[in-house]
Image (cartoon, rainbow, N blue to C red; front, side):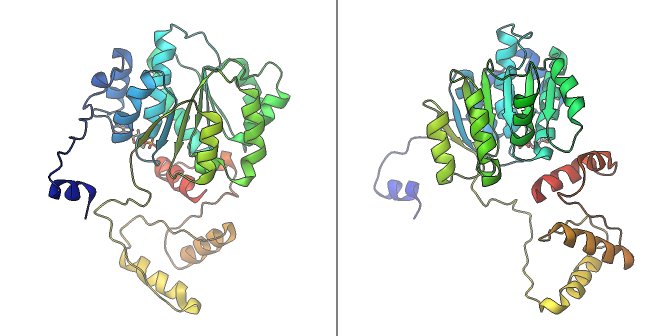
Length: 321
Ligand code: AMP
């Protein structure tokens, strides 16, 4: 029986859940940014925004359990932009640093910062691998307000690029912290944390609360507010999920049957290796289906040059990692 049912049965009085704000203005977001949200079609705050923004505006560190798609970028970007604006600190270069585990997520985050900060002349820089390093050095010279990066490339620039330092940042965001704590990023993350001032605000966003995230939270955050937006395995109610148990030797035939049944739809297929994406796409094209492969072995430049369904593909690519 649910907790609230038990309480009701025992005749206990239930505390009503606090009402969440239904507009950005109600959350305390300033006029310029409310207008920016409006231009992006954000009329009502998402749950994570409504839960997190008031704490962030009160000057608290944040630990938020939220997944991509929940509106989490707005939840950390709006309070950062608001402080940049309120303190008339618009000349403050390297005001905030956002760490992301993947290039695609870093690009999506920067796009949202740029859109929200367009009217206030925000300068945002993405530092990810797969992109010419010299171009990034030139962009660092323009002294952006916000730096969004993956740990490896960001650390490369901190080590090698003259004049680039994060010693004066006011905000550190660790996005998808559970993935940032993978072994591949461990050393880079440690080294970056050493370069960042202790006196800063930290927002930690994670889809799951693992032991490692908990440890990082204790090491990095000061008396954080904890907010949660979604359960780990939530899927939309309209999603139909089916499982086919098929002989391994004939799985391609079964797959083709399923694809043929849904020829009019856009379909994503996840496979285990980069090579499998290439082979499967080749096979499907030979069988007359329009198919393309996306994998971590594609160069970022090629990936970004894809014209069709760019947004959808970036999200998909982000999911595939
Ligand atoms: P995110 O979880 O930050 O990756 O955001 C997922 C998508 O939700 C992005 O396309 C955002 O533009 C969109 N989004 C964020 N906040 C809102 C909002 N309050 N209303 C409508 N869409 C939103």
